[in-house]
Length: 317
Ligand code: FAD
Image 1: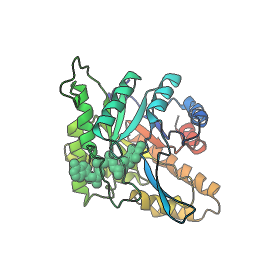
Image 2 (image 1 turned 45 degrees about the vertical axis):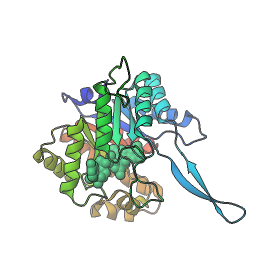
Image 3 (image 1 turned 180 degrees about the vertical axis):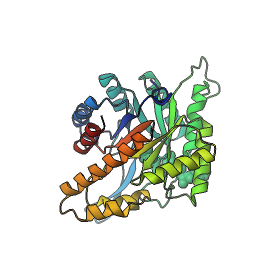
Image 4 (image 1 turned 30 degrees about the horizontal axis):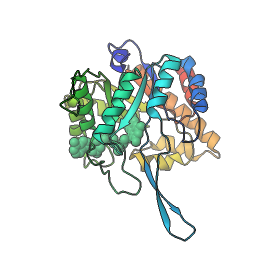
């Protein structure tokens, strides 16, 4: 089932949990346990992140550094299909531009189609930690709108090789990312919105937002999108704060604000457990307000942690 058909026409707010594929070397047991702990809350679908190759420099005995290309969380395609078949819930694998050329992306999409996956969240991905800005792969995409275009071409039966015979159409429902508080690299909110509209016009059916801790930012973003002519559903992303230091880390990593009222409560906490409880309660307040305002779906960034996500889902269902 396609995400767009789950959220339109609107009946009631549904849930999606965002999960990470296992670290290299681990099997999928913990991931399945995580899903087992969340399944009673009837997620309408599950998002699964993708992680590009990273470059690490490891010290050698001779004092020099060895450059290693490391893929810490491989397997998104296989795990996405495995979850979808095991639980009978649509899975939305995230596909990124970074680290993949167009040919590799096309082959990945062909695999996903064979495996019965019908949904994709199309993203650019971040630059390598060793680079100051995002560098596309040779013959890869520089921005998510180009990736959306490639996926739409496959829907139209247009593959990279124009001489291919007996081509069939690959029909994925495409979501893209939106940033209520502006993407960190965008020069201003208007430019960011311009490019968001470009992704939608390229063929995205819905938008999922970056996490935010102040619902006013989401509502303002939706108003700005509507004024700019973006009419697709905009799914809010909620992240329950799980550790005390996230109060300073998250704004740095994601260019987002933490409201002072919330930050002040977290500052009073003596332990991570206390901070996590405050974070969960804040996420519940956010979620209740969003549901009252009839958002189509709540996208919960779980980071593989279930106790707080369960507490949120229990309160809301
Ligand atoms: P883009 O839409 O390409 O935008 C990136 C920047 O370029 C923005 O500043 C935008 O304004 C600008 N821009 C956009 N199009 C153009 C253009 N055509 N020309 C010039 N400038 C342009 N990352 C992962 O690695 N794996 C994941 O699984 C993952 N999941 C995510 C899920 C969600 C819901 C969200 C919100 C983010 C996720 N990310 C993930 C992070 C995401 O990859 C980063 O935020 C990345 O920096 C931007 O991705 P994007 O798709 O928004 O890029």
